[in-house]
Length: 398
Ligand code: NDP
Image (cartoon, rainbow, N blue to C red; front, side, top):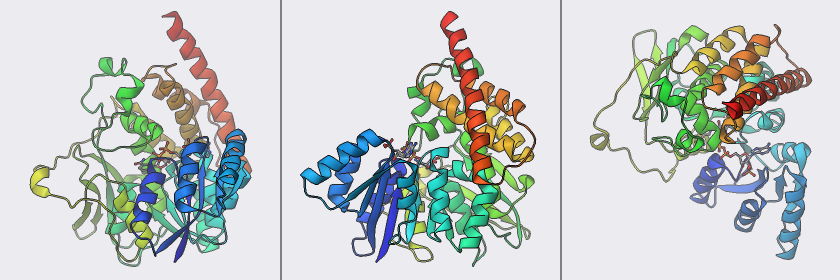
């Protein structure tokens, strides 16, 4: 029986993870669950899973959760704050840690799981974008296992040579082809994009995801972050990662070998497949996902991305080339800008505009320690917030 901690248990990936775990009763035991503010949803999960530890980052909600658990006579202990998340990640009874907190907020807990030598199921790509070198060094030094959950990276992992481990340089690989759905605005004109609403941006044609990653898909920043993620996971140069727009989201990514072979992983657009793959690896187990019916899919189309209409892709490539402070700035500014867009304060095209301005201010340098990374992240966030405030003001006066 493998113990599992789910960081970000109340989110889209967290719920999918628990759905897969529920299909394999005797195989996994839920040890710890975490959330940010949604304590009622975490309470329901505690009733169902009876974890040893439940963590709510926000202290007010944690107090309410603790009171409700005590009232119902449930055995779960409650912790809060960053320390609580780190405790859940490093819990001695957890063999596996699903890292599914959204954004840079997940960095410290994800790192703690690696430091504790766990099998880390990595959905939190922002952690790798911010702290790739530190994270990969920690995985190696602690002897942790790293399995990608992002559907594209999980697909690439599945197509890698036998025995491949994340962070190694794969033998015989020419390049990887990272597929992108193109998001809800794939064919939209720049004029129409200027008027889109948060709900339109979150209405992804193929995937049902949390709101932040949905907006990232709409701007194609998601693919930009994934380029950086792929470089760390698969030891590749920037030139070895090619983005291919594939609107059907059936081919999840491909690996091209030096002999001309191209291996692809296909499947339904359902995150339970990569989650089940990473939980069972190197074996296989059912995920609850319906079989792929190629006759219903009918056609598979591929087209090049358009960095003019999707400037976030261009900015991410530039950040990947510069590395260090530029990638930290890219991620931080994106998180701030997306939150402002979702709150209705800035228009959609302001997202790349804010990121570009923050990246232009990013000093040269490559922060390597956690403290340096967090300081660079905080600096970039406050610059992005200041720029967003100016843009919101301009919008109010327009
Ligand atoms: P959601 O927004 O659905 O869920 C986020 C989870 O993180 C929730 O449990 C939330 O708690 C928690 N959380 C949010 N902010 C904090 C914080 N400051 N401190 C602690 N916990 C926090 O996100 P997704 O599940 O969509 O995405 C999670 C990660 O997985 C992201 O990095 C995303 O890029 C990646 N990913 C997601 C995919 C998907 O299909 N959804 C696909 C591939 C990758 P609460 O409920 O209390 O707010």
